[in-house]
Image (cartoon, rainbow, N blue to C red; front, side, top):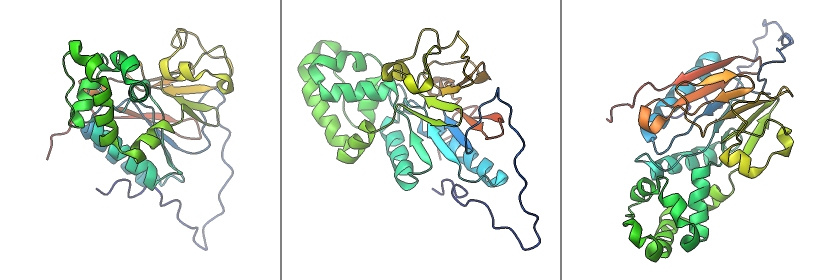
Length: 276
């Protein structure tokens, strides 16, 4: 896999006759203005084929535009529902390890549910088991029994899952940030409280959402890129960049290209790739 062959090549050095770079034009204040180009990928939910497809598109854009210091951010919910959660986690872990300064994975509520389960299997198994855990466990070669047996088998399942994950993967998951910021752009899994400053957000809101996030417009000029809530179409409006287009069920995975000049474009997979 020649992922992101253009990713970190940076800018070409100027030739002797090349004119010096001009100062950038002023960017509009009502647009997201990250300090460097950002590629933000929506909820994956175990869709490895779509992940590989969107990575190819991102690499193509970076190469064509010759973008300096691009940042690649995933908004969380890498597991559950889809069939390839284990492979998705492995792929993201590899990318974040290879490009630690340029690839960031945000913690999603589904990863949090899995971590909570492993921390206290008997007390916290039901919530995760009812929200897509069966597919994640199956991707690790672990069968989820019928609901009547959940409590009795939860400790054994947690032990088996921890063994399949390995210490490095579990430590990486537990260290994932709840959000990242650049310029007036904040990226979080589920959004933010529109009445509070981005620097004063509850971790629970960032993971699980806020009842007014999708209906109340921020007034501080900050933009929030997020997943978590499936939308028919990706949108960029009223201080929100909404990226969850239900990839695991629709075949449409969305990534936003957000440039420092306020430009926002969407990349999408319109259908799953045929396996080769």
